[in-house]
Image 1 (cartoon, rainbow, N blue to C red):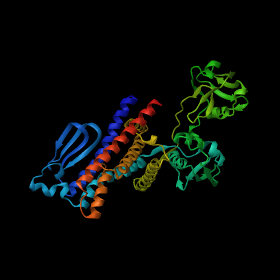
Image 2 (cartoon, helix red, strand yellow):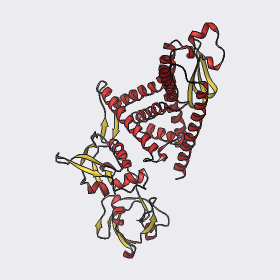
Image 3 (cartoon, rainbow, N blue to C red):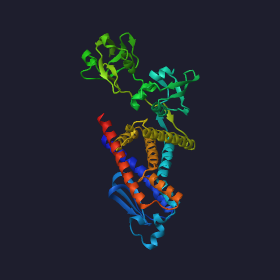
Image 4 (cartoon, rainbow, N blue to C red):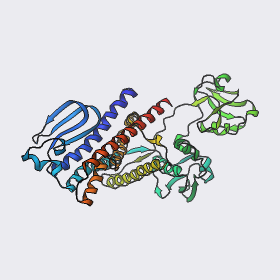
Length: 451
C-alpha cells in the first residue's frame, strides 16, 4: 500500500474509531436518560450500510467519513406525538441534557486513557534521552555528550518524545528551565537551560534547532547518501557512498560535524580540502562551499551532499503490566492534556504560531506514519487525536458541545432556557468560526505540501 492510499485508509480508520466512540457517548447516556434516539450515524451523506435495532434506532455508516451525529427525538425539529413527548430530548431536565452533551467529549477522554493503557501494555519503542551532541543553548548550559536527561522543568523524562514535549513548551515561552542530568558515571547535576536568548522571530521548528540537542541514537556516520546536482561536491567528483573523514585539519566523525565545521567558513578562505574514503582508497578533494540563504534570513555554507539514511533501532521500551499501565496511562493523559491546553492558550495569545493547526491532510499523513511504526505508536497517535477532539469539543463555541454546555450553565443560573434568538445568533457565530478554522487548517496543510 503506497503512502497516498495508506494515508487515506488510516485517516478513515482513525476518524471512524474516534467518531464512533464520541457519538456512542451521546447515545449511551441519552438512552440511560430515557431519550429516544432516532439515528446513530458515523459519517455524513449517502448511507452505505444501515440497520435498525429493537428500540427503533437506525444505525448508519455514511459515505463521507469526516464526522458523525446522533439524532434524538426533539420538539425543535418537528412535531412529536403526544405519547412520545416524555422521550423527547427537550423534555428532559437541564442536568440530563448537560450529561448527554458532555458524554461525547467524556467518552473521547476515556478512549484516550484506554488507548494509552494499550500502548503501555504492548510496549512503545522510543529512544533513551541520552545526549549525542550539544551545541548552541545546550552547550552553553553545560550539557555534554552521553549525559542522560532525567527531568526538565520538574517533569520526569523517560524518552526523547518527552524531551521534545517539555522543550517545545519552554522554547515557545523563551524561558529558562532547570534540567537534571546524569553523567556516564552516574553522578547527577542540575543546570539551567536558558532559551530566552533564542530570537523570537524564528518559527517553532527553527527555535527547536537552536536549542542544539541531538540524540545519541540519531548521530549518523559522515557517509554521503545523495550528491546534489550542480553542487560543490558534484563538481569536485564526490560520489554517493564516500565517507568524509576530514575537512581541512578538522576531523569529521558524524554527518552533522560537517555543518558545524562549515559554520566557521568564510568566503575569503577559498576552497576547502575534504578527505574521503571511497571503498578501500583514501582521496583528497578540493571543494568550493556554496552559500545558501536559510529560512531564518541567515546564510549557511553547503557542500551539496546529504547523509545516507540510517535506521536507528529503538533502545527504550515503555512497557508496564496491566495494573501498572493504568497509572501510567492516567499520568500520560495528564501530560498530554496540559501540553494541548498550553498550546491552545499560546496560539490564542499569539505566542505560538497558528501554523500548528493541522487539517485532514496532515492528520492522514501522521496516521499513516504512526501505523507503520506499530500498534503502540498508532495507539499513541489515536490517543492524542482523541484527547484533542475532547478538548476542542469542550470549547465554549456555539455548534460545538462546549457551546451547548455553556447554554445549559446559563439556564441553570437564570432558571430558564436561553432565548431562541440567542441560539440562532450563536449558530451563525459558531458556523463562521468553524469555517474559518477549517479554512486555516486546509491552508496550513497545503503550505506544508508546497513547502
